[in-house]
Amino acid sequence: MSITTFSDLGISESICTAIQEMGFEAPTKIQEAAIPAILKGGDVAGQAQTGTGKTAAFSIPLLERVDTGLNQTQGLVLCPTRELAVQSTGEILKLGSHCKGIHVTPVYGGQPIGRQISQLKRGSHIVVGTPGRLIDHLKRGTLNLESLRMVVLDEVDEMLNMGFRDDIEQILGFAGEGNTRQTVMFSATLSAAIKKLMKRWFDNPELIQVESQVSGASGIEQYLVEVRDSMRTEGICRILDLNQYKRSLVFCNTKRTCDSLVDDMQSRGYASGVLHGDMNQNMRDKVMAEFRNGRIDLLIATDVAARGLDVENVDVVFNYDIPHDPEYYVHRIGRTGRAGRDGTAYTFSAGRKNKNIRFIEKQLKMNLKSIPLPSVKEVKSSLREAFQEDVSKTLETGGLRPFIEQVEAIASDRFSPIEVAAALLKMREESRPEEKEEESGSVPKQKRSARKQRSKPTKKDPFYTPFVKKGKGRSRKRR
Ligand code: AMP
Figure 1: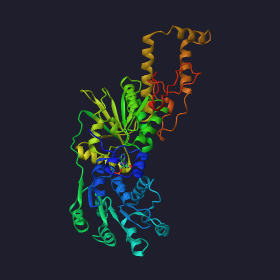
Figure 2: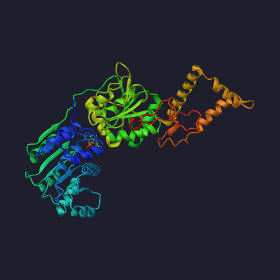
Figure 3: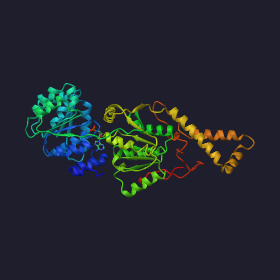
Figure 4: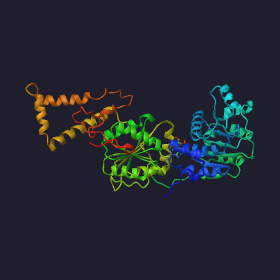
């Protein structure tokens, strides 16, 4: 399967650099279709949910159209809520971080208008706002749309549901009907009301709809874990420790998230590796070989890097980020449960993102089973069981003579061997940090697993084995 890159879409170098820095590996489906369409200059109507990458789909061509040498408002983005206005402004600023001298201003109700007025006075190339506040500025004359080149109506369906229809039409009226202005909209649905709006204000719009031709993957247990973003890494650790999964795949949406997650997982003592598009073939082959031979048992990857990945026996797939598309969801979780084996997939979600996962569920006509994050108590009891099993196995394997001698030497006449064993367990327990509050959701780093030796080794430690950190290959030697 050939992969479209951002530069294939005719995006300028400065924006491509920003995209690279944001860690986006490849355009999402809606971006692949909408960016070239908008760049052509005609009106465009895109059908896309949040979570599909629609903000970048209109922000990239919007930035391309702005002339920073002209100190006038050239782009206007209408969105239903103040949160979305702030979020979209942030995304535009990041994408435009290499566009010299670009000014983007969010305007929304609830914020003192004076501050917005002085920002607009200084000159703003792109204004992102909620309809009510935009009208306020237009009426006061503090926002001038004479040089407007593009107007974007984001989440039109939401805006109409919120009763902004008249406001939108009024703003479009200010923005000059049918002149050089390009009109773009995104909406999750194309209702009759939206079509009516398009008929009046759009000039022969190109319709962009990206349909997923997929059905849900069966035979895989699929769970939804609703936790805030900052708890996702902890979530993976608890789920891994509770279930003692051996080989796991974690999917993130960006290269940057993959990099920071692999660092976190390694510092928590998990034998992890990363796979993404910034790695050369040599590095990828090495990580894949390590994953296959069990030197690493947790692989963190982007969708593109994982394309064509063929590894047997993946016990579990985690969606650290919700995929941009239902099709990706099916591809991701299809990595587990191969060849008639049982597979399990966990997807993390919270707040606004729940909408994205509901969309995937609806498209795939299935429901994820919602489960709570396992508690610290559950994880600890599972770890204890696993530790007891490990001890039994070690006893059965034998080769204990030199250690028995040590125990006898320690015990001498004063203690029984059982007391020595108890002291060793106590030392093991006490060498770890204090238990944190369960509410904080944090299992102390070193209390992870008995299966893997996860406490940080020191040379004083009688069980010390050197830590093997292999540059970007990132693996911790299993012991
Ligand atoms: P949106 O649908 O615009 O709300 O975007 C959802 C999330 O996806 C945002 O956090 C974006 O920064 C992110 N995103 C957008 N495009 C891409 C891409 N091509 N690759 C990875 N992440 C992306």
